[in-house]
View 1 (cartoon, rainbow, N blue to C red):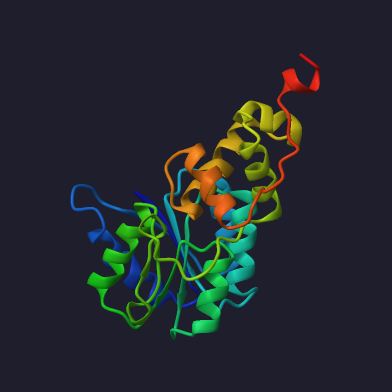
View 2: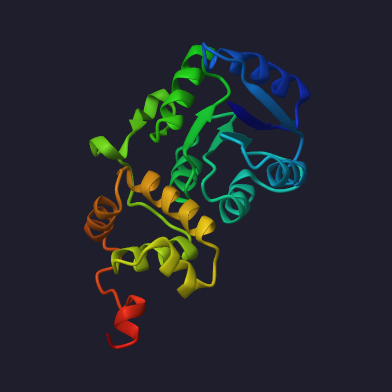
Length: 221
């Protein structure tokens, strides 16, 4: 398990590093630390095997939601949990709508934090206790799923029945990149298969008209 903690307070980073050692009872957790977004983005570009990012909302060089957006574009498969000093409902909704895997406050108990992060690693979306837990597989969502433009492009082509390789050909992206986007789309929608994703996305109004064609269809075969 490898986690990146991003916070401009060294004591907070050290405290979280200690708490995170209890995340997996069978093996230690490797915790990387960054004091600002620039350092976080640099570490994420080197450590491509990160499992999770804990990102403070208030940082000296940019706000957490902006940083999360950049991380999402560069590492779409990487879940990001926003940490905040208070449970601000407006910020929480924005974070979840923009693709955060969770929104947690620093004032919570260590045991609650670990429990919430285990939920995130299982593919759930979590929020402070007073707002309950958002779990798409059980239908407990607070807002319609929100995707980046690139994720919408991939989703539209998925709904057209194209494979990852075919989607990559159409979008001029590597197949591994498409695979990462698909993984994030499945997580956001709270489903396990591409078919379930297509159905759930249509339920939310995504991809009602799909113009994508496979290579055989484009060649007239």
